[in-house]
Image (cartoon, rainbow, N blue to C red; front, side, top):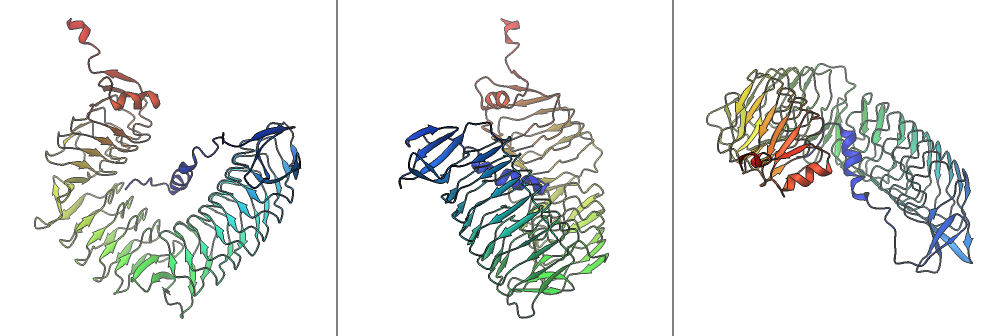
Length: 533
């Protein structure tokens, strides 16, 4: 589990990362320059704009150049050109390619002609001053993040004929208030309207058969939504963090989904998909027969203080009750087999929990940032889990799962034989000054020591091979970390906001290159050997 708690980071890291090098030049095509434009000849005998070199604010793209029809605006052609406020696209253009107008923050108006068939990934990403948009009927494909982070985009018209709109295409369009999805679309892709915080009205046509993961996540002003009968699947977190959404209407004839008291369920796998954050009730009884509590189903439901789980329940999925800050009473039934990653993350009012012997799997970060959780009880007969001095371990994979942030000890020694430190395992252990890591540890997980404000020194043993991303995030008093040559992988931002840190390492080790690339101060283990010569 390599997930950051802030879902916005999931979108911009997970989706943008694959396109880091999309603006690389193609050196194999015949290219030429006319005026302020650079072009390349395409295999069909037409021309593609590859770069604009001018300084104009109003730009007219030619329909022909040297008798070649201009049919494509190439990859990153106007990337980052902020002076442009208006561009005229001729009706010869059929393709607007990846990142064509990426971060053209001055662009206020764009008229896409009816000749266009394809709008590529990131085509208009972060065009922050773009206000309105009409996608004509001949466009059949809109790529991933095509209009994402267009923060002033308030009016969008989607014409019938669009067959595919990629993941996150309108994510972060925070002023978008309403949109009508055309009948030609069969799928609402992952994160399509993610963090469209002012979206109040949306109509899902009968043609739609699937709604992707986090599709409407963070649409805080969406009040109600109707699920058509043809929808066969709804992805995890599709309606999570919708602060005002209180009603999802489903026809009684729908074969896949049902609502009971405004709570959304899947009939096929008896899954509770979504509980409305806007419900005022403080107590909720999950119906007997429900087997699964879905990912983020109760995420951020702060009005709830008590939830009754049925004996039919076998699985609590990732982040299911995360950020339920007032949830104080919950009993895990003996039927439970699996609890997912961060299932009770930041449930600040829970003081005690008992884990039944039926559990065969428990994920990372399950109880992280539960700052009033004093104890998690585990039977000595439990085959999967064990507690030692209040610290929770997995017997199966010899993983340290959770160190209570309520512990006041300043020192802790991880028992010998433990092979991994789980994600968020020591997160916010504010009192911890010193940690002893045994030679058996192989992996140090994501944010495993995040926000350990008092931690000052860490010696990583020769057994460790990997240190995951943000492992020591915001350890503000961490001054000395020793990394051995056995470490061959260190994740991004592993020592982020450790401003006083100096890393001690071996010459020619992987850690040397990591420190150089990330501007981290370092010294060598043999740096003082010359004194003894």
